[in-house]
Length: 416
Image (cartoon, rainbow, N blue to C red; front, side):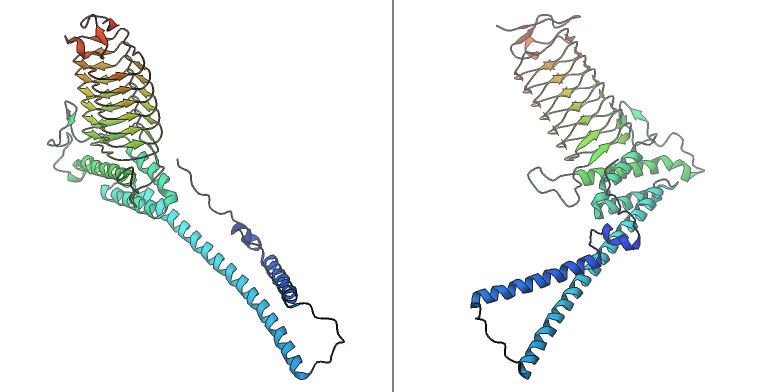
C-alpha cells in the first residue's frame, strides 16, 4: 500500500496548540510584548544617536501642553501594544480556523473514501461503477489519496474473474454470448458482461491518470506521478497502457486477454511480467524500461518490441513466443538473457543494439531467426542454440555463422 499522511494526534484542549505547531497564548503574547519593547527602546536610542545626544540640563517643570503630549504618547504606546495583542490573537484564530477546515476536509475525504470502497463490493455493476468514479474524483481532488486509490483499483482487478467470452486461438470472440446465458433471468445472464464493463472502466481509470503527453512536455493535470501499480495475477482484457508512466509495475502471473498495447510506455523503476500469459497479441513499440525488466517464463502470442529501450538487465529466459516476435531497433544498454527461449514463429533482431553481454544459450528457433545488422559490443553466447528452420547463413548475427543450422545443436563460429 502507498504511504499516507498521518492524521494529527489528538491532544487535550489545553495542549491543542501543540498539534497546530503554535505557542501557547501566554508565551506568544509575552514574546510579542517583549519584542515590541525592545524595538521601541532600540528605535529611541537610534534616534538619539542620529540627532546627537542632548547635554544634561536641569529638569524643567512640564506645562499643561507637554503633559498632554506625554499622555498622547503613552496612549499611543498602549494602543500599539493592544493592536499587537489583537494581531497575535487574530493570527491564532485564523490558523486554528484553517486547521479546523483542513481537518474537516480530511475527515470528509475519509468518509467519501470509505463509502466509495464499500460501493465496489455491491452486487449491482452500476453501483460498482459509481464507486470507481467516486474514488477517481477523490484522488484527483486529494493527491495524498492517489496511491491508495490506485492500490484499491489494482486490488479490484486482481479479484477472480471469468471472461464472458470464449477464446479462439488466443483472441477473445466478442460475437459470442456468455456460455451460461439464461433468457429467463436477464439480470443474472448479463452479470459477466456487466462485470467486464466495470473492469474495463477500472483499466481506463489507470490509463487516464498514468498517461503523459510527451516526456519533453509538462504532464496533464490528470497525471498522477510517482505511482506504483501491482496487477499480480490480474485478468486484463484489451489492456491499453500507451504512453503511461508509472514508477514501478508488477504484472506477475497476469493474464492478458485480447490485444495488449504498451506502446510508448515509460517505466521509471523495475517491471515484472514473470509467468504472465498473453493470450492475444502484444505491442511494446517504443517503450522505455529504466529499471530491471523481467519477462521470465512469459507466454506470448504475436509480439513486438520494436525500438524498445532497456536501460537495465532484461530477462526473457525460458519464455515462449507462440507467434512472431520482433526486436527491430531495440536497444539493450545492459545484459540481456534469452536463455532457453522457444520461438515457434519468426524472430527478428534486425538493427538491434546490444551494449553488454547477451545470452541465447539453448534457444530454440522454429522459424527464421534474423540478426541482420545487429550490433554486439561483446561476444554473444549462442551455446547449444537450435534453429530448425532451413535458413541462409545471414540469419545469424553478422560476423557469426551457423555451421549446422538444422540439427540438435547448432554450432556457431566467428566469421573470418
